[in-house]
Image 1 (cartoon, rainbow, N blue to C red):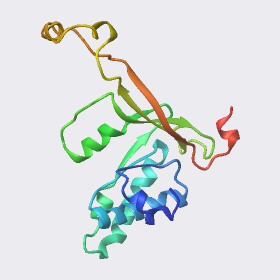
Image 2 (image 1 turned 120 degrees about the vertical axis):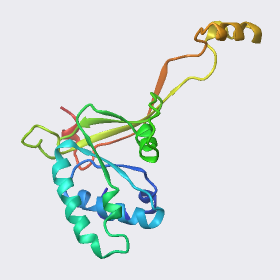
Image 3 (image 1 turned 45 degrees about the vertical axis):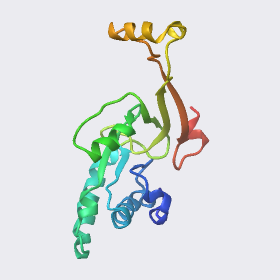
Image 4 (image 1 turned 45 degrees about the horizontal axis):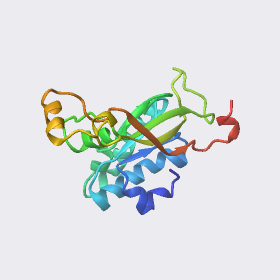
Length: 193
């Protein structure tokens, strides 16, 4: 998310933004994006960030909030920022994340939009071994609708009887479909090991 992306209408509509690393051309845009999104949509944003950057981003958030005092809603957009720390091999259900941010209830699901985090070679890990840069794969997961093949020839009455006896009638298998993979500011040597 380069510094100019905060002005991009498409980026402003995003409830969740993936940050690959926290060089200034990426990290400073977080605060511009959050402020512009508040003005345009009055909605908070969740940022998935490498876990090694959480401490620095939290300090930056406090500083930007302090500097934002002169606005009509001082610091509200900055207060509403949610940072989700991510590590290599983490998997985040973005659909559930957005639902949790909209309501206090939790409707956990194994279907929806998911983000898988993978290592990239751009910035070394922090002193605690936490990643400072990550790549992401965004995918969807859904179940195949309809009856299992062995029940397709049954009558409605037979299906109703099975359902009454709590017999699973639909396909429980999840199907995943990758939408996009993004490695941030990396080169092929960072992806091929």
